[in-house]
Image (tube, rainbow, N blue to C red):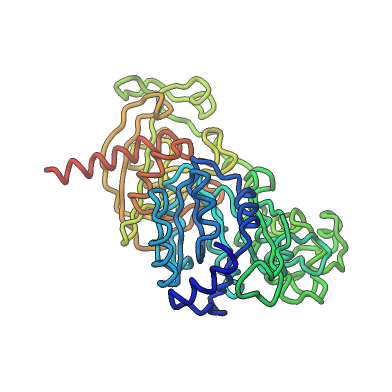
Length: 450
């Protein structure tokens, strides 16, 4: 839309740009195309656009052949866009982006997010849409230049802070260009900047307790002018020795530590798991025949190495809202590391039956006990890594306590989202999880039909 057209359109639809909503409308068409080009959009992409406004970027995204979900909070703008941009690949929702359920995006094969983030709520929007784990493969934000500088900052600079470390922990951040106020109507009081985020390889940085790490970082940067030792030193055993080992001055302030040094500091307080639970390699499993009759017992490595038939359990936990908990397997797992899996599960060991194993795995992995319901038994096959699997379900009300030795991360999902997710991205899951989930859904359908 041309510069001369925007004031007239706004007048016709009764919109006086609201400063608190960050309503600044882009009128530079060349810049709109350059912004969209930065997202490298392809026809197979599903693009979520936050705050499309008058559709300056939306039109260009649609030209690329992608499907678009546009989230517009202002009812008048949403109605205008719906009437102006009727398109089979555009879904327009009159909704607040802060209330959008990001987990629903797992049902799309490849998701990219574009947004001209309102200055007053850029921080909560970033926290929501950049949280890890995420179904999004690329983020492209127009932000207040000052905020963009903080995202891209390097150690030892004024802009480097808790937000910097939080964003760079899971993402690579690029400052693509500065955007002057003159390309917007009305003109904002400050310059903007275009920032692109892409996911880091999960194995690029050491394992750590992210919750502990962020607590340290927030505490450390809460008093920037003080030496870090005076702010968090009491939590670190032998501060001076630890600082020397990690390669920073014992009198350093928070902004002087690199991301890897912050991680190492958190691991000095609570060492992160770097391998299987001690003794797990000595676990002995029943090796069974095609009828699940025990033939002999063997150690884990031998069973897996020989691809012998053995026994396992998978448990699917529901909360009171009907959501299902899925876990992402720890990075050191010998099979399917960092893939999504059932709520809990594992092998049946020697001298225990399936029910015993299910109760044990639930306690070991999630720290709870629950009334387990047996659903269905899956035959051993290549799809289950040659495991006979009993699938269980339970409804839980208490909080889970994921075991960091076993679980990288986890979250609750609506069953319909899991259905779409498995169809769109089967490689995200362990094969046994897919089989267990399908068995649960078939069991439910069978009972409903009866």
